[in-house]
Amino acid sequence: MKEQSYRKLERITNHSRYRTIYQEGVWRSSQHFTAITCSNSQGVRRLGLTVTKKAGNAVRRNRIKRLIKEYFRLNKSLFPAGYDVVIMVRRNMPPLTYPEACKELTELFTQKTNI
Image: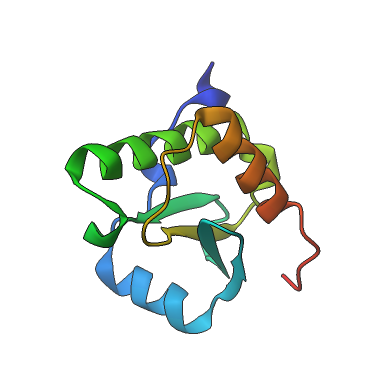
């Protein structure tokens, strides 16, 4: 059960770390999401989320964040170990169901990249 949790250790919480990831990371995009991947020194896969007000009101933004966190919790094997991943949501994203969001995120993380 421990493997499917979303622990505090697996979250990016430091503002300066977000800046470093934005500057040094590898950017990939899909229709509704942008993922930025950058290596970390901790050897743990960590997730950060950026959902701006342009994505909708607070209810929509929180729903999007819950969908992405749940996807991360259940699909940790798709995320590279020892890397920080920040997922940004594009503006005016339509309300996606969980399967639609999973499909798009899976395609985004299974693309060939230069990590």
